[in-house]
Image 1 (cartoon, rainbow, N blue to C red):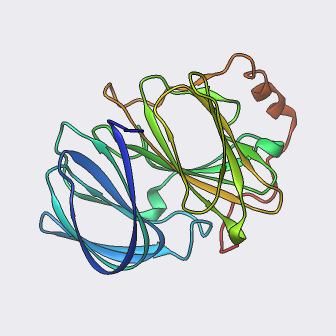
Image 2 (cartoon, one colour; image 1 turned 180 degrees about the vertical axis):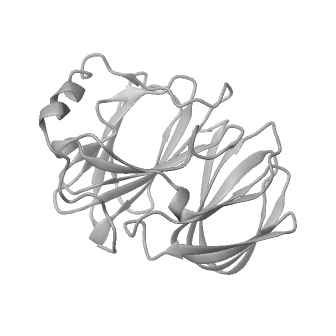
Length: 244
């Protein structure tokens, strides 16, 4: 399956790597470990984190038509999107990343809004990550984002598994484990199901040809679920913070 707008590379970094962005804008976002990014005469030291359940990380934004060097050790995500404008390279501090607790009860999850409309300027790229306690459902109710391609990259604690559903023109229910990716070029998707005992993480990369806007449309057959959250507390296991 070919994605025309949203892209993702996960780099196992041990030393120095040269990155050329070409026609895409990109984030350098540590999943684990730390690195130094040099680009356009700028130098960004990314403190990073122990793993994705430690909390938010700092990150760097790379513009299109750039050549960058990333030096360090760890697992580094490079989400990117085809871009028309060339914006300046920038540093994104961890303390500026909005953290949101979404849903309630068994639909509780934690969202880190790194590069979304209203949180960080980009031409087309939208990036967030979602952390779901074991036994809970996220990306729920099932929904779609018209005109937007999506990539989900997963990590699951302790070698566990989770499940991701995509449906509409094609019906898929995939078992996912750490390192797996699900591509969503269009259509309905959700839930992302964390098996009991196994906390779930996914990095969500989004982009499309139109205006950079995150618009959601719930599957009308399941939209009523949102109303039930009003009478339920948020899962007390949230927020995450610390290796699990």
